[in-house]
Image (cartoon, rainbow, N blue to C red; front, side, top):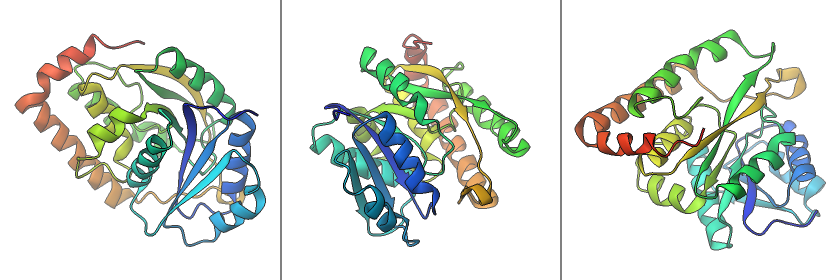
Length: 254
């Protein structure tokens, strides 16, 4: 596959276990180049990845010295990608939740609307835990409030294409948005800044531990972080972001 000159697949990864190699293999089968950002992993998965796929020209592995969270890994990878001449990145999880067979469709949509975020709209199967399917409804509702309408169909779903320059410019100075709060805060702040969005359907699957599924989500700690993020965003909306939110409604593509 001829490497693309503007768009990369980026996979932030922290102790993903044996599933990482399969996820990367599926991504490489759909797109090139693929960048993996090892976010301070200590489980040896990235060393194993280098052994199994390191000879493939479309793969690059970036290693961060310590774990900073998904948002920190994406922003570090985004900065390096910009320096390498790339303009967009499709971010997907390392745990196999996101469908590699949708990569080409999302990239095509991004090339047709390069100023926009291409956001995944998840389609859950019977393997999705009830608490995951229904617990995200609160975040969906709160993001709809701060955007004065449902511009982002699912702010927690991380399968999406970002235009890299505005992502780094807008999220780089933000003190938060470095862990599981990254996906919703990135979508809100980019929308406030005038980046339009296009929502595309995407299958989402949940793998059991026996299948190699790994989750580092901590329900108390990370839900508390989400609550604080939503509180900050609502306060900003009321104090000074409401004109930007009104303008953002006119930028909605779908």
